[in-house]
Length: 95
Image: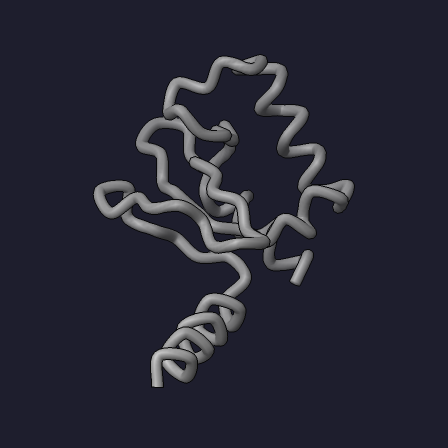
């Protein structure tokens, strides 16, 4: 029974490749996913598949992050300094 519950939970996670997660309920990203913080003012946490790391458009967002923050991210995680709508547009094209 526990196996079925975990399988259903995994299916729910995989069914949505990009998801916003409340920062007050931060937990580790599931295996195969990466948590990033997106926004210019208020940051919102998103969980994305690690396969996005090899995509040129996502790498462009990472370069923007490197230019602004270097390796010192104030949120403690990877922060991408772009508007949420641009992030969602880029990631929706990767699906």
